[in-house]
Image (cartoon, rainbow, N blue to C red):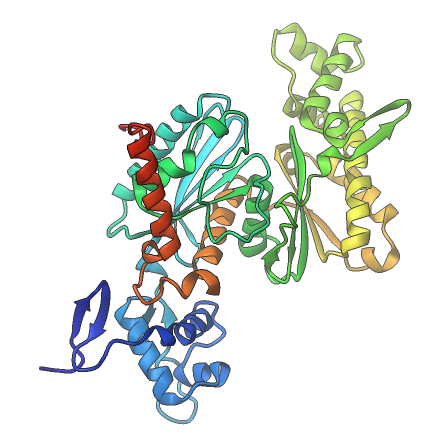
Length: 450
């Protein structure tokens, strides 16, 4: 029987005629796979050089990774004076990652490959204030709908972007339980429900964090060493990427700049209260009521609601009062961001949110305040731009969060021998705990019938 045939033993595919690779091979498998996945090495010779492993060891590990379906060597590279080298590629299509963004008024879902590339996305209106059980039911329905449209959906993980900060400094490999991110989440096991429904590890990150990663990997941040991302909306938050990685701090609470106190005249309040979209809308209503803004007054006369977007549109049409409202918000945001820039010295600052992305006035006012308050060394090469990603940034960033979690050495070394993350011992413990709680609580963790 040929020695290159494969067999399945104890959950591991392996070659007949030779012993199964021992657990001691896991570290070198992890190193080689991540060299290939990050494209630091694309041929066997490059792998040998970067890993400092011998030819025979590299060949053996690549054989194992090929059997597991995690790499592909079917393509030939460009010859350099001799035989064309065989390229070693990461098999990103081996699995899928389900991603979602939960916003105050909308829900977005999608599916990505193992490289974090978004393959499909869907957005719809939703109220985050609805019961978490109803939200989970809709999320599961949409996830199943997406998976049905995948040719061979081997699910590797689920990653969700949520409005609030996720209290986790990054020590956990993945989410083991549902944190109290939003009111009501403490009473419903959202993470546990998704694990029970899809048998896959789950990651949660704040919307600012996922948007930061999306912009860094697929937007304006490509090739930048340090990027500061600022989201302007009802809430104002910031995300920091350094050396291509998200900086989360001690508790996962980096960038809560909306709580910084600011002062305008004799008024003092938080940045969110003085410059967020709710404040912009409120000032717009006051301007309309007092006749300072003819355009907004006409909106009010017709019975239309005045929101921050109406104020932004009026400003774009030359309405002086609306221009002043947005310029003041931009200056306040810029003053706070300038303090961060002086401390962090980013190469790029990206402003996001519907107001910042559809209106030049707020962006221009923020730029002026940032450049004016920054040290010359900080501002010399600093770029300040609006986001290029829009609503897709959170989904792309969520996918990147999952891929970085799946292939982090501490995570990967405990599932790579089985070829699927569901084999990780900690994930098995989480599943066992969910099953135990279901038994004790009378199936209260049963996922919704959808």
